[in-house]
Image (tube, rainbow over the protein chains, first blue to last red):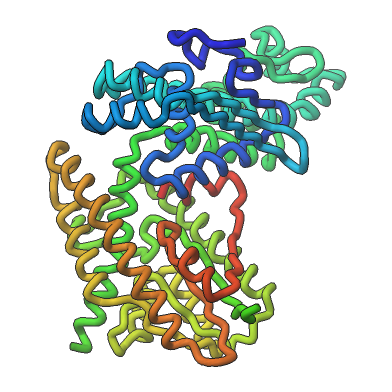
Length: 256
Length: 210
């Protein structure tokens, strides 16, 4: 499946959209988040935006801007005439394919189109945001899957008991769980853990499960925070570093 | 083929309020908008990370009496031990761990150029004191560009410190922030072994977003 230039990544089936193949059943949230951070650590200037830029070069060339003079661009276009790049990124876990990105780029074409449009970062930023949302969506899906798995045995036990607790019956009626004890799509984990059904849920569920649920909730929150502005993160880091240096310099001055 | 010396490299993340201390420039009660609960969770995750690093280093069974420690942010000043002690007293798990290694007979080495650290501090002061959003954007760009230059100079200085202070038979143990590229410079002369502690997922965000 090839995406049209205007289609949003969010609207595409993450298992199918081209040029990215991602097996959401096999890749875990730990792996995704670690990779996301890995890209930020080693490409501090472009971060995970590196992949976005490469994808843009292939599919959305008109969104790319290049900071070079017209003269330099003409020279580069001439020199790169006929050249093409095939980039294949395959992520495997012990030989099993988790993710695959295959990109075909014609550098001279990319530069030609970039020249026409000039600097306009907004469409690029929009694509970036969409990709961030997509990653978060995948992580949330994974988190939900784990929480649902953890709850299933408990719900099942209640459903098999002679006297089904009223709260469980209520969840059944609301369509939040099914007869197999599975938590369904419309159920709100937030409402069960900390929201309006918190008290009833806490009375029925073991304490460890509640704690696990809280961890999952924290994780979801973290996922959202990761997508936030990098400037905030830079300022936070700067404050930490400043605090350490202040003590260090103060201590060295004492001796002087 | 040249016999490569072994070097232990610990990439560290300066977690938020690693020193449990608030810089004066920020005012007394600055918490970055985190609730007490949020701060506690974060501090727990920071402690967990350092416990993990300590355990990993323990597993290496290093002869600590032959280990020489090089620490990010520790200047050549003549009172390095006092600096480490003070930072450990302020609650920094990084420096508490360094102090523990020193007590187990590891040697502490003055690592960084004080002048470069003062320049970094001044740069941070400028960045953090600007209040308007427009000024902050300008300062962020300036900070990013200048701090990169400083980082390269610091790495070169540290590399030279390691090469000139390491005694025959000693094993260097280097604690360096993840933004440094010192490890790449060291690869020419040393066989670099990394000590990385992988946090459980629920803690990753806390540390990485710090």
